[in-house]
Image (tube, rainbow, N blue to C red; front, side, top):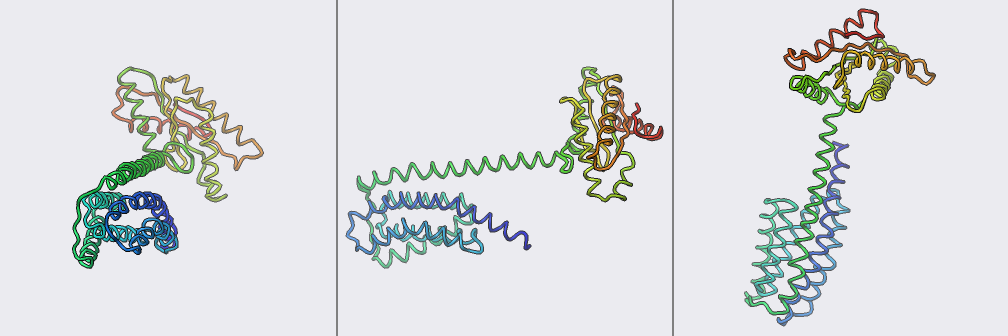
Amino acid sequence: MPEAQPLDRENGLRFARRIYPMRVLGLGLGSFCVGSALAPIDVPAVVWLLLVGNCWLWPHLAYQVARNSRDPARAELRNLLIDSACGGAWIAAMQLNLLTSVLILTMLSIDKVAAGGWPLLFRSWIGMGVVFVLTWTLLGFPFRPEPTTLNVLASIPFLVSYPLALSLVTWRLGQQVVRQNRHLQAFNRIDGLTGLPNRLHWEESAAQELRRHRRHGRPAVLMMIDIDHFKPINDQHGHLVGDEVLKSFASELRACLREVDTAGRYGGDEFGVVLPDTGPEGAAQTARRLLQYVRRRAAEAGAVVPFTVSIGYALARADMADTAAWIAAADAALYRAKAAGRDGASD
């Protein structure tokens, strides 16, 4: 929980920052709508001062209140309810001017749905209704619904600009969700330590290649690779060094494979490689090249710890029932390479 609180507050601050420009725009444009409806009415000067305060000062005050709150999201939701309550008061003060009242009610409802869905909308309607009834009662139930030409002209900018701005904000949030989903999908397909595809993603690639072999008869090879004596490396040098060995080998594996080949971390210190359009000779060449890469790295002065690998590989066959059978064939070859003394390859 202590670690979650700063993250929750940062999310709340982002929420407040999204609302702030929309409130500035909406109330700024709304002030002209309300002002055009109040103009034909003989209202005291204090009403105009309240209009200026609500539409031009309140947006900045509301943002500072949310920004300085321990829970910015909750504070911003309260601010949104205050917006609706003020809207109810202005509908009454305008003597139910039909055009501006409907416009204010609609815009205040749209932003509540966008910010908090139906629960926030219903709460805002209740607050707006209560304040409207109280204000209208205090004013003696005035009723003047007819809009003026000035009122219509003053409402057009609000009617056009605010929905467009809100749509733009919604679109940006949607794009952000798409990017986050892509990152999450990539994260779920990649092994965090080595940067290689994880087992699930790699097995999908192997299954796809096996299906291609069955359909078109194109050759393919599946390799299983194991780091020799990896447990003693962990026991003697620690898991951090073991992790460095895994990352070092993954780097070597990427360096010696083609772009069309798919390497993945199968689990622990075991790796798998799918080699499309590759026959026995190509598989043997790839295995020799990989063994040479690893040996050369082990001889370098900057090597973490010296290590070797064992490699087993198997050709795709049409009679293989599934990917598991292909992996099992390569695993059997891997055990033969180990039995032969390790630091080698077998088919």
